[in-house]
Length: 440
Ligand SMILES: [Zn+2]
Image (cartoon, rainbow, N blue to C red):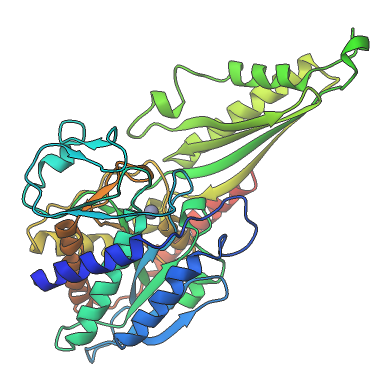
């Protein structure tokens, strides 16, 4: 990978970032928004033009392609994945990416809103980027480095490998998926359609990130039915659902066990939405923990709060429904750490210190790993995602691309051993443990 790849990465990134691909949680379709096809169709075209094989757009909006193996030995097929959608959390329409060539340090003021300033004091990672080419949005939109950076890296890696068949690697699969930001990036057919033994999502942040630990996650909905009566005749009859909703929130811990009071390996119960009338109310929570036991405890606590309130007000009806979202990928990966170890080794060989801190969130890799396609997450360089301060260094993207190429090479000489019977048993044990919790 030479400086030419920097320019390619930059050009690809700018082209993809200008395309509005926001996903929409309220939509029932897959992909959730038609506009994601604007980028998906472009990627199909570009993959064909660089000579990728089996280029396919699935009916659920994933683009898949193959880079043929260049070695004789049978080595595991690995996949590089990125998501095309951007977060609905902030304006993603009319993105105007700006390249700040050879960043000289100091504040970067964005032209469309002078209040949006990127300062190395506030964002220390920027302080290490002097001399690099920094890309920002213009102040009124997000940038969409999450995850157009991953898309640009995967495309550049694909082009580079196809043009250099002397580089040793097994079969590589490339995948671009919609709707990651709304938690629907892994369609039921994706693990099968991917046809890869291992995968990597290019959806991480700081240089060197090789993440294989994510939260385990459940969603909880509390539905409260009160007793609705005209307020003029309400004495001793009205049971106000909104008062009961307020009690649920007030009874839950607030000085602990919330996102704003926890860090590192602590989990939480987070209310993120409530709606209702005096007659009925709904409270929406997410429950997070690194361990299944902790996750179960959070669910039990919420259920207990509801049950206690129900006992004090039998005229109301209070139900608490918990559904599974995703599970910590560590449970699967620790039985076969090759995908993690090789990614770390690729970083080290390129002089990059690998970092494997657990992330307080999930990735598409969490769901894929559960479906037996172990999928750690690799860095891209993206920073301050989902808002107007988002930025990325072109050189970080280039480092990520170089790691992917090295990784493909390392896999081509990795011993192709199927997991031992022991490990398979352990995987099944994890499956069972996770599934028990699913019904919770
Ligand atoms: Zn992302």
